[in-house]
Image 1: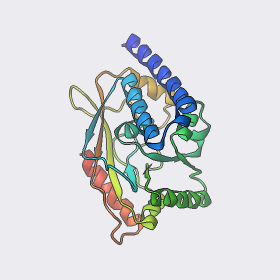
Image 2: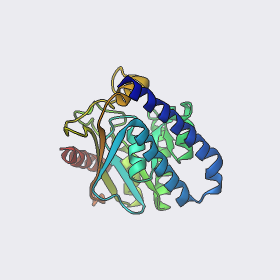
Image 3: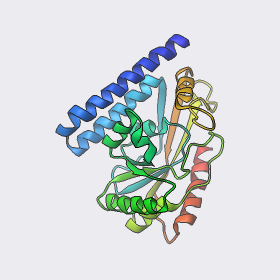
Length: 243
């Protein structure tokens, strides 16, 4: 398995280089819809390089405006969502400074937030409202960080205000990983606690038959709920979807 993991690591590296080339040389010549399609193909290539199968359940919404809300388990979640349905993520600002990954995130349209700053959260909510009113599809992880894969962390409600203000639906999404042969839950891609990114990546690369399952729920409007009540309902729905 060591040789397989090393080969996968090489392929992931090549896919990152391809992503940089795509952003630097192709994006300026492409329309927005073409960029979205290329990002989706690139994300599928990342999953293949990782040796990860993707299974999509439910129906991704065909168009925006829409806010996607998903549980968060791994660094791989972003590639999984992009592979299933292109969207713009809201992410912590530290990622914008990561080598390679930061540049790819900026090129894909990620909106960055300083989570410790209430003022910055308000700024991002206003920015999200503008994007949603323009018909875009955004995605957030309301847990605010990656969980352990067992149970969901409490959902933070602040960013959900954008969907209420813009009067657009939210589509709940459930993510989890399983062994493709046995169907048992896999915790290999989890990125939690004292794990470093490289430890989690290497564990993922060494895991055979890994399958990522992404399930799209039914889009819903707030229907009079405030953001906190809506966050609680969405968390319960995603927990149920995960089984």
